[in-house]
Length: 141
Length: 63
Image 1: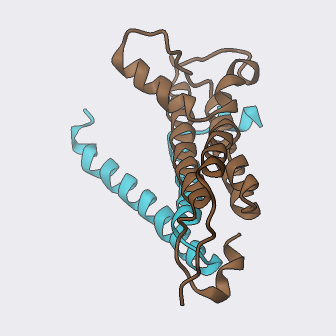
Image 2: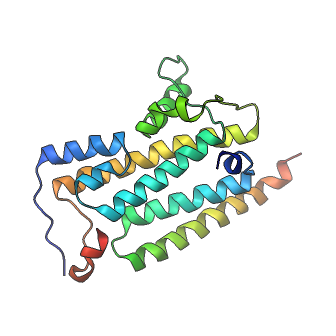
């Protein structure tokens, strides 16, 4: 049996997407998906924090190099973690060592992962959700 | 905490990445907790097996 999706309006979907981008999981929190909000915040936050703790590079948008720009867009997906990266990573990046290089990838992964959660928050806001068993629908929150 | 992540090996970083991404993918794509757990385990193992397999395939070209 399928669950009828709630009919939410476009403004809520956009607000949830923007909030979810800025703070991972916040979009789902607005949509009252408590469990997903917590999991997404912890997972994206853990990846971002690990990347910074490993002294990975965080790209800026001012670079002329196309790969640096791609890295910038990936990093920007981490939202608040991107903007706080200099405060969290006080010692700065160190990609001369392999650990720093792994950190660069982990931080970019955090950004990309958060963008996926943003898309899901947008869909939930529009009323498009995964279909599931009626009995387990409340479990998904 | 910083020291722990700072001392991660390549394998440790890969394991951490596989674990976190598997959990997130499970919550993105599955609805029930049982399905999520199954998917997390499956995706985590797939990440690990494929990464180690590719590592072994590249081994002859390492020198």
